[in-house]
Length: 173
Image 1 (cartoon, rainbow, N blue to C red):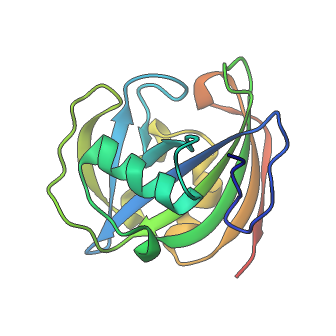
Image 2: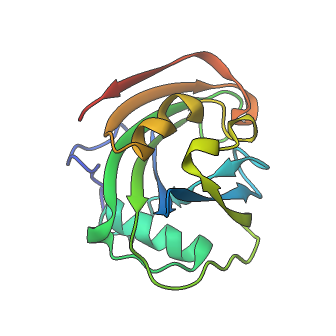
C-alpha cells in the first residue's frame, strides 16, 4: 500500500513518513523522553513511523499515541498542524517527513512501558524545556502550539542536539 501525506501527495522513495502528536490540556503539553532511536534522551511528542497497515497518516498518529502513551484518540479529532521535513546527519533515517497533530480530546490515562518513551510530563506551553528537546523544535513547535499550520525544513546535527543550518518555516495558516 502506498501512503499518502495529509494533503494527498505521495512522498519520494527516500523519505520516511512519521507522525508526532502533542496532547494539550489546560495550557500544558504532554511530552516524554525518547529512550531509543534518533533523539534519545530528549523531550518529544508522541509518534513514529507510518506503517504499511495504517490506513492514513491520521490513523498512524492515533495508533502511535496509543502504542506509546495508552491514550485513545479518534483520528478525525486530531488537529493537523502541518509537517516538518528533517534532514538528519549521521542517522539511520536521513530524511524524515513528520506530520504534526495536536490532540485535545482522548480517553485513558497516560501509561508508558518505557521501551520507547519515559517520564511523561505535562509542561506549561510557555515553559517548554527547549534546551533538552531536538534543537529545531524551538523554531516551529511554538507556532503549532499557538494554532498555526506550518511547513518546515530542519537540518539536524548528530542525534538532533544541534542544527547544521537555520530551520526554514513557512506558516500556511
